[in-house]
Each structure stands twice: as C-alpha cells, then as structure tokens.
Length: 94
Image (cartoon, rainbow, N blue to C red; front, side):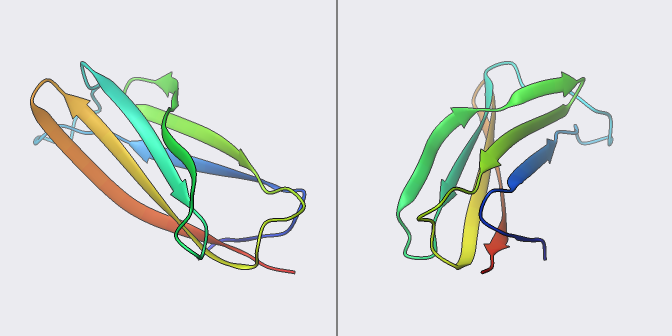
C-alpha cells in the first residue's frame, strides 16, 4: 500500500495485456476514476496518458484540503465492446 502526504503527486499506472500476456492498446479508451475516503468522485473517467504500447499513467496531485485515508482508483479500458476494470488505491497520511 502506497502512502502520500499533502503536496505529493500520486502516479497511477495501468498495464493492459491481451489474453496471451502481450501489451496492447485498447481501441477505444483507458480512463481513471478516483474517489476520496467518503466516496466522493474527485476525477471521473479522465483519460490516462499513454507511455508506450499497453502502458498508461495518470498524475494525481494531493493538495491541501484532501482528507486523510484510503482513496480508491478504478481504471477502465474499453476495447470495442470489451470493457475491463481494475481497482486499486492509495492512502493519504498527515
């Protein structure tokens, strides 16, 4: 579990592979949603940045006013009619 303090940047990563384990880019999109400990959506289906084939990231700045606790992330990759979701998270500490 990764922990971050106010002022730090959380880099959220996504790795997309096909059924054979080969890195692939979904044809439609790779987006991320982040929720705070109370369940309030802070980013909603925001496009992630492509680093290379099948590798994506999103930078989330932890700013003053964010509550301490566990933040959840959900990456959604859409490839035509196939939708894949991956949940993760990080902790904000004092």
